[in-house]
Amino acid sequence: MTYHLPLTTNFFAIIVAGGSGSRMKSDVPKQFLLLNGKPILQHTIERFLEVVPAPQLILVLPTKDQSIWETLCERHNFHPSIQIANGGSTRFQSVRNGLAIIEKSDGLVAVHDGVRPFISPEIIQNSFDTAARTGSAVTCVPVKDSVRVVGADGVSKAVDRSQYRLVQTPQTFQLTAFRQAFQTEEQAFFTDCASVMEYAGFPITLIEGSYENIKITTPEDLV
Ligand SMILES: Nc1ccn([C@@H]2O[C@H](COP(=O)(O)OP(=O)(O)OP(=O)(O)O)[C@@H](O)[C@H]2O)c(=O)n1
Ligand SMILES: C[C@](O)(CO)[C@H](O)COP(=O)(O)O
Image (cartoon, helix red, strand yellow):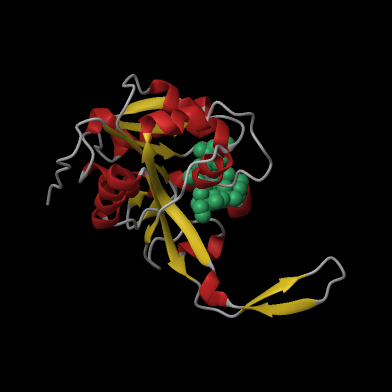
């Protein structure tokens, strides 16, 4: 099924795969590991191609990994006309490098982790629709477990889990605001794009994600 975005033709997606996967402890960068016979990254890109035209999709990869990716694309006969940007030393820098490739001054941009291959096209579509209306769309899910906060003294205390959300990607924003936010100096607490936008003073709209939309981080996530 192909999805259409009626509100703007200037919509882009940056898929970040510039990390080293240190927590996965695998010889091969985790985004290249096979899942059902295909690289994890290919699954993710295929989901996005159901919504975003290939030339408007930017894949961020470390320069040292780009030839591995080309070899994998040959092997799996996967040749979308997407753009490639060089990975940075942190996720923030990788997003910034992807953003630098986009020539349009306004529109929408979604940022997604290359290692979240189970994202649904419906969530991607909803993130663009919501960001077109409100300026932002940050995917998240409610917390299912009980939560405790641990103080500096090591003492823990139960908190009201209904007040918390687990944040996922895609995170989609209006391009002009996003560009402005990413001009800032990187801060240690920037764990995602929403934290960068919030730091720049932009409001965050949350949208419903999915418990299937996991980030493949450690070996047990592959099971
Ligand atoms: N310098 C970086 C660091 C991370 N990422 C991307 O951001 C996403 C989420 O990061 P994470 O799961 O932490 O990936 P890694 O940094 O590869 O893993 P680790 O933290 O275990 O080293 C991944 O798709 C990763 O490739 C990136 O593009 N550039
Ligand atoms: C962007 C993210 O996936 C949202 O949950 C997350 O913050 C990435 O964190 P990581 O430490 O770079 O894996």
